[in-house]
Length: 427
Image 1 (cartoon, rainbow, N blue to C red):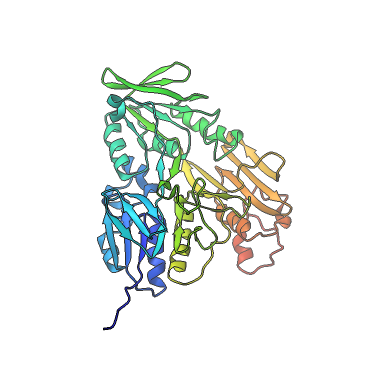
Image 2: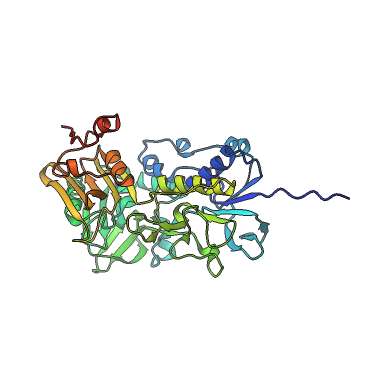
């Protein structure tokens, strides 16, 4: 009697940027082995980046979805939707689901993303007024409540909070922003650059309370009552919590899969355990500029890491090189681009700067020798792609060093074949 070997299968935990990119890479490589995808949510993949546009009625709900059911069938993916992973058991090559079932795996990719941090001092009665913004369910809640809200309190002054403020901002809503630091966007930029964004918020009538935390949220009079660490009490029909995210790596804690804040990976997205990979917001890899490991929680990075993981799972060796933080967004009609070491310690790198607060523009570039290692562009960032190219390719910018901060590079001519030493600048 002959024995037919079971085909090894790929198992993916997570149904967003990294997971989708891995699926595409596996199939593009020619690998036809079965793929099983597990997702805690009960729907096809969608873009969390677009949720604020949905809240602000700029994008229809149906447009949030990146794929539909046909994507999974086309790529030969068996989906397990609506099930959370409780634990990964690398010793037995098993995954434990929240319904008590267990699933065997051969190759495993953990692309479980991250969850929004919440407030731990909200009374049960007040919870209906409080929401984070990470999932499509969160967006549905914020959209529904904000349409009739008169008072909104936003806690945390990071990117998600400011994008949410822009989405819900109308003349009939009074918004108060509570910031634990003494500036907005303290993780993205320095205080001087933050003044540009703060001026825009103030012009829209946003009240900002700096240096405060939320001590308690309770219900009274049909509203939430937000108590600050200064003792102020703010009534609110909606409380939006923007306190950052936490990588979803609890399923590997107390296992042989090594993790710090995120699951530690090498350049091929391999973890410390054979045949187990990680990518996206759950993965912690090397930052080429700082030389340290960190979670780089951006959509671009998740897509890139997912592709590398998928190729390696399919037996096609590939490496993620040139990894560093990068983000380009628009806040209160101001374009903000941060890349690499965009907020370095003073004295660590040479700073090239051009700041005009009256015009709402700030350009700061950070150099190690003659190469750019970071940039923070506020209000004048249309050459962000050029700057990123310089960082990623370690280009010697000596010819433009005296003018690059004040005026964007006209780099297209250089890339098009002209003398790379010509300092060509745009208007």
